[in-house]
Image (cartoon, rainbow over the protein chains, first blue to last red):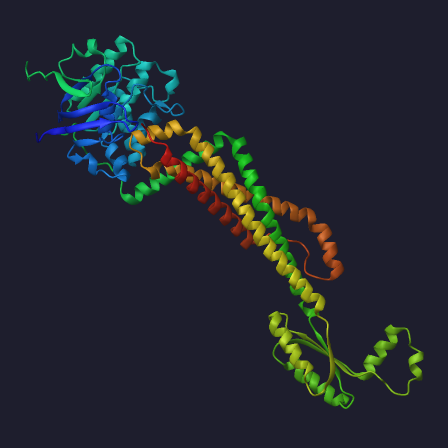
Length: 231
Length: 316
């Protein structure tokens, strides 16, 4: 499919310590502009699948293509540039505790060498988008879990990526905060950003009209297809 | 399909390089200022380590300058044959005084030599009974101070073979011993400097290693969001550089302070021997060398440590 942003073809993976197969002959595509949830029991390999996309792991078999790039051909030294093309969101937020909210969100732009003015404008816009405008000078430790995750999301979107991948982004949040975070993802998806969220919050995602993939015993399958436009 | 509309605001390569380095410089200086005690302690260790070879080098420079003042001591006394009369002796003196490479030539006639001997030997009246003056005329030749030591020696050797010269006495053994001692000290300073350079490398490397360990989580996050190794490495390299430069500054201050505290006794000593100024002054060249060594060692130690440890920190 030509408009696939992510394509898995017969991908299998197991860790080097010789454990079970995490993925077995997985075929999967995420279209450009699509949002999907990846579910499955704990330890099913949801995080591993995201790691394969982020090139934190390389599959033992099969081909993964992300935005036209065959990942097996991405050299180690090109991995940072590859990772800069998408935004990542983590369960434990991964904020730098000794930097302010502003500095945390600005980090991807600093890495890209943007000017100070441009960084200021973009960071304020990103914080505005996640509802944290005015909290630029706060320290992460002073924020609630939900606010910290929103800072993490602002950091992920500040460089305007085509793709957001999130690993259990609501895992450490209460239901209200979790719903707010999921709502943010849907808003970014509405403006064309592809989103893939690994989560076991079935109750939360079942109410949302997006495709659901299920990973169990190494097998990946569509649990619910994407709704037809206008459905 | 792309998400939002993309407008390129990426800076040019040159301005980005400048921006990246300016940010790294600013961030690392801020970080060091936030922990002044730790920074000062590390810089002090480096300073003391650099001060020893710098101080020895300065002392060596002082001794070298003093020994060049002693070059005048490298001279030869040419005792002329009895057959050389005063006119011929003075003519020889005049020709030697004009000779290239000779700084000074002094003619002491037989009569002058006798008068001097009478005055200083204590045998004044006893010598009056001599019917004939037994002392030869002497030409005391001192080579030009700018002449290299080997050339000066060759020149004096050649003079002793002149046909008018009966015998010659060169007083240079003690000077050669001094030169030999200076050569040994110079080599010793080099060896000590090498060993202490290694110590600076270890001190900075260990400090940077601890810094990397304490910032492990930050490095992991940076790698996750796509920071290249050069971006992650840069602050550590600048930190090493600042340690080296601060250590060099402290080393120079310590050497200057030591020089000032030794100035009085050294002046007295040099006055007694009539040589040089006697004070070991830290020359501009030495200051540049200390700062250059500090900067290079700090940077290299950081580069070595970061290269060894950064690859081991990978997100999983």
